[in-house]
Length: 117
Length: 116
Image 1: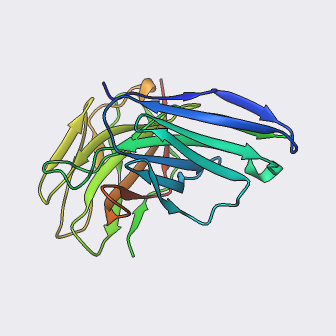
Image 2: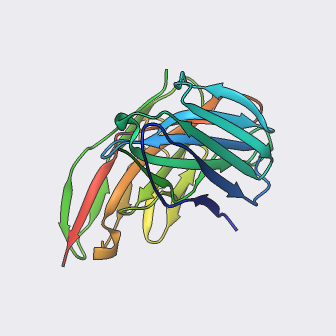
């Protein structure tokens, strides 16, 4: 099973709202990632969690707040977003790349289409 | 730093035509190479991968060979179908970004449209 699930599929929120995106995987992966993808562009890395600890924050504004409650779950809390934050938000996971025979591939979820009004 | 260059398209082909999407890379180490596919309104799916020189990745009729001498990983399919219409991303991974996690460097993507 190589499935990463994300909820909700679509989200419309106002600039004063607080909402959360959820991501789940049951592949035993210990690295999880948040990406932002604008139309006709490749995904841009936002955050990386390794073994439930935040290891990378790619200078993302504080209105985006990630959380990793356990090894299977990843959340992205949203607050006071701007219209330019409208995008597809993708979650991904991967095995520990230090293990022998691992090709470092990441498995992506279907994404949450976010619209900020 | 690492980079991936791929033909940007869009590419329009008739059904059953031969497909090639070129991809070249620059990397400081010995990267793993990937092709991801994104169908309209969906996330990215891993299409195929190769982890060392001369490896051939293949899946669903698509193939790509890791060519270290030309730093290339071109995607090919002998006979495309309408259902292959999607955006294809070439990517590499070799930089550790924390305990066990690795960064993907993507190309800009190539949109493929297959017409009946």
